[in-house]
Image (cartoon, rainbow, N blue to C red; front, side, top):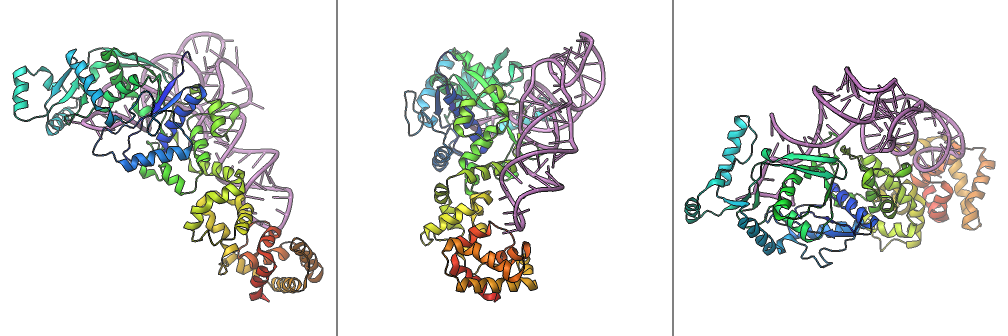
Amino acid sequence: MADKPRVRFAPSPTGELHVGNARTALFNWMFARHHGGDFILRIEDTDETRSALSYQVNLLNDLTWLGLDWDEGPQKEGAYGPYKQSERLDIYARHLQQLESADLVYPCYCTEEELEEERQALILSKRMPRYMGKCRQLTRDERKQKEDAGRKPSFRFKVPDETFQFADLIRGAMKFEGTAIGDFIIVRSNGMPAYNFAVVIDDHLMGITHVIRGEDHLSNTALQIMLYKAFGFVPPTFAHHCLILGKDRAKLSKRHGSVSVGEFRKQGILPEALMNYLGLLGSSFTEGREVLSREEMMAAFSLDRASKSGAIFDEEKLHWLNAIYIRNCPTENLVSRLQPFLEQAGYSTDALDPVLLYGVVDLIKNDLTTLSAIGNHISFFFDDEYEITAEARQILEKESALRVLKTFAEYLKNSAEAVQEIYPAAIKHLKEKTGVKGKDLFMPIRAALTGRNHGPELDRVFAILGKNAALKRLNPFV
RNA sequence: GGUCCCAUCGUCUAGUGGUUAGGACGCUGGCCUCUCACGCCGGAAACCGGGGUUCAACUCCCCGUGGGACUACCA
């Protein structure tokens, strides 16, 4: 890499940030950081009807949440701004003029209805549906006529009858024939630039050296190469990574379930886990490493390791990673990340004893797969009306169970040991007094104390619950 | 239909002409253990098919087949 690379992530604010886009952002971010280059964020909001400011705000939040910081872009103006396409309209207008004076574009007065008609006719006659260039040969008079009739033209690029080639960093040599492509619109009749037009101008003007994006843009690249050539710009290097697929191997979309970064955040997926997983999807790291921080991935990143075939999104593996990150998260930090999820589970976090909460979280964090599952794991610590499961009831029905619990309660009542010693001492006493041991000894205690037959180590549960609460819970059984 | 892309366990992948085809998720047997989880040790599980090239193909080439993307005045 001779010069400092400049890459960009260029989403359109027309919806929630999709994990596929998040992954593209991650790849660009890793590439920039790995090579000491710049990561630019550009908002492609030329579709006035679909773009919304709220989506843009969301986008920036999600990116920030993921830890993908940009060097230039919204809220971080640089030397190549503005970074919103809607604020660059004069630039596009200038460039349209440039192509007009080179006679490389022409106005098209076809209405959408006419275009649709042409399309259908072509499909019916089993020909490729593409614009046949009806307006390309319009005379000056004919154009004037249309203008006078009040028709606003779009502008189409005269696609040359040539072969266009480029070297893709991930896929190798690519080749497209101009003949297969109809004259495409570069400026819409409402004056807004079309994607392929704006993207070329911006990438060039912003000094983008590498365009890393999804495979769905592969065929667009041909059109863009044409435009680069028409402008006399040197095209950047392209790299098209594979797409994220749903279970049915089709491009991952809403009908496959959760697909937006926001949805995963609401489920209690940690950003570290999401990034790690996305970095693993359709790529790999040396020595088969799978659990890597954002920084470790960045250091090890290479486009050479990006795979070409689509990758199915595996939520189970994401959850596996998430559990690892939860487990490794310092408890204090985890407690604060858990706040919104605790509220959602119906706990007023202000009312919760922070020491108790810390202890509980520290105890159960091994079992947590997503933050949103917190409620299931802590209810028996905080709720007096904790539920007793059917399995637990069965355990409590056993004859020896009652003896154990009775003895346990008696011991607790009379004991004067410190909290840490009381439980082991009680167990020792129970073994001697009742002769019960193993499962028959511990399970009734577990069932009575927690209402369940599964859970964390009993000595730690008891330590958190304390003697009084324990006694209270034993009460119904003695 | 046209153009283009892709093809290793169910899934994500390693592999770059000679390997017992490796790892991870999931599944599963065992150990640990009051239970679950964690952890540890094992197991089942893959080179889409056919032709070439070569002493030798998962690996290179071609043809099939299969999947996917694009085919908008969306990006």
